[in-house]
Length: 65
Image (cartoon, rainbow, N blue to C red):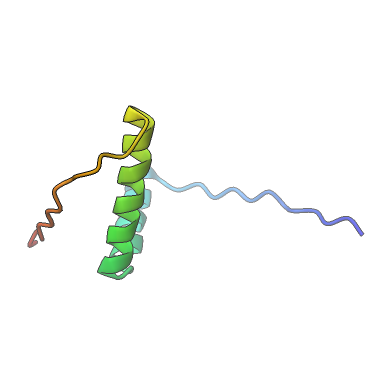
């Protein structure tokens, strides 16, 4: 039995997408957001320098709105 997947496209204005992204990440717990930032840092430094540095200062600043 062959399975097929339907292509779905949703058009969203960039301004609305930015707001949806913010709402998505604000709905996640802080630990999950930090884990994603760490994953992105590791990927970026590995891509840029070929390896992740052994020491990076861990600084977290909370911005008040």
